[in-house]
Length: 170
Image (cartoon, rainbow, N blue to C red; front, side, top):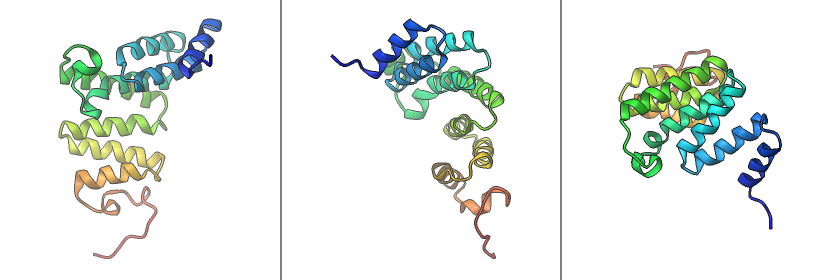
C-alpha cells in the first residue's frame, strides 16, 4: 500500500521531530483540507522550534482568514461559531508578523489586502496590494484585485516605479 503525502510527512516527522520543512508541508496540506485548528497546532510547534519562521506565521494568518476569504461559515471549518472581528484581528496579527520577518512574502500582503477589502477598508487594501506589487510586479491576480477595488485602470493607481508599462496621455 502506498502512503499518502500526508502519511509520508507524518512518518518523516516521527523520524525527525525537528524537521521544520516537513511540519510546514503537513500543516499546509491540513490547512488546505479545511482543518485550520489542526494546522494551527502544527504551526505553533514550528514557531516553538523556529520563532522567526515567516511561513509559520503566514500559515497561522491564512488559517484565521480562511473562513472570510473563502466565504465559508465558521461552523463548517472550525466546528463552532467564531467572531468575525476576532478572526480578522488574529489573521492580521500573524500576517503582519510574517511580512515583518520576510518583507518579500507577497502572500502575506495579498491576504491582508483581501481582508481589508472584505471589511471595506479599500485604502488599506490598495496599500497592501501596492506593497506586494513592489516586491513582484507580475502578479496578475493582484492587479485585477486593485482594478476591482478602485474601478480604475491599474496604471493610474500604481507608482511609476511599480508599473512597467507605458503611461497614456489623459
